[in-house]
Amino acid sequence: MTAALLFDVDGTLTDTAGAGKAALGPAMLEVYGETGSIQTFDFHGKTDPEIVRGLLTAAGRADAEVDAGLASLWPLYLGRLACALDELGDRATPLAGVLELLDFLEEDERFVCGLVTG
Image (tube, rainbow, N blue to C red; front, top):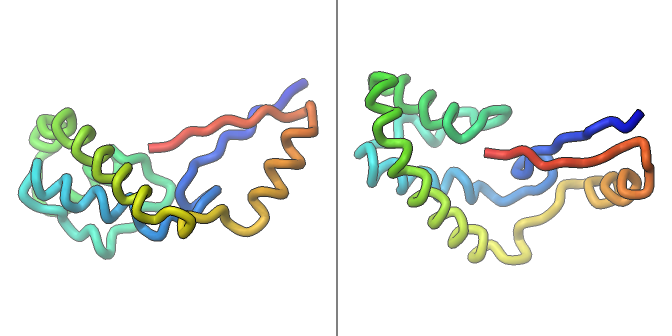
C-alpha cells in the first residue's frame, strides 16, 4: 500500500523569511483598510483564508465583510508574494533535513508526496 505524505511549503519545507506576511499585510490594507494584529498573529498551521479571517474577526470585522473582500484580496496577495519571493532569491532556503528527506522519499515506493498550501 502506498502512503501519501502531504507537505506545506513555508515553515515546513522552506524558510521564506516572512515573505507571506510581508505580502499579505499590504494586500489586506488595500482591500480592508487594516491588517489586524498581523505582527503578532500566529500563522502556523493555518490556511491563508483562516489567517485573514482570524486577523479581521479579531479586529471586529463580521464574517460577511471578510468574505466580501476575499476575491479582491487573493490576486493582490499573490502578486505581492511573487515579488517578495523574487526579492528573496537564494535567501529562501529549505529547512534542515528537508532535501535529504525528499531524496529518501523519492526513492521509496511506499510513499508518494504532495504539496498542500495556502
